[in-house]
Each structure stands twice: as C-alpha cells, then as structure tokens.
Image 1: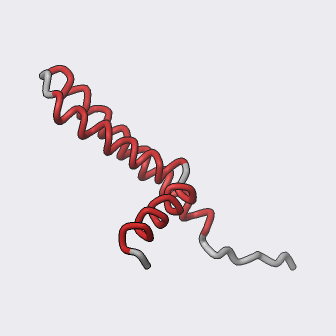
Image 2: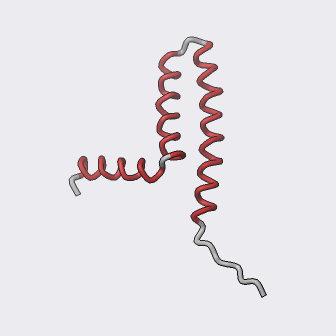
Image 3: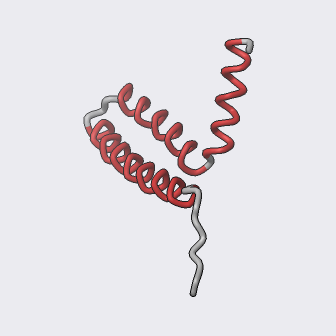
Length: 78
C-alpha cells in the first residue's frame, strides 16, 4: 500500500499567491495603460507603485516581509 505524505500547505499557499498576484498585476497593467492613454500621470504613478509592492509580495515574499517588519520595528520601536 502506498502512503501519501500530508502537506502543511506551503506549496498551495505559494501557488495561490503567485496566481492571484499575477492576475492583480495584469489588472494593474491594463488600468495603467488606460491612465497613460488619458495622460492621467498621478493615477499612472499610483498604479506603478502598487505594482511594485504587489510584485514584491508575489516574487520575493520572504524578503518583503522581512523588510516591512524591520521598518515597522524602527517606526514603532518594539
């Protein structure tokens, strides 16, 4: 009889974050193109910044979490 190993869900979590993050990045890109076409520079910049933050969480989640934790520790002092 073959035994199946139970997973703690890390692979599923990584997959869901990658898929959801990529879909969100696609939506941001499409909206950014619309803002560029209308010459709405402020909204375009806001979408670019949001895209950078989302890409950080999707492609380098551990590094991004560590950076935000370090920033919060410096701000809050705890």
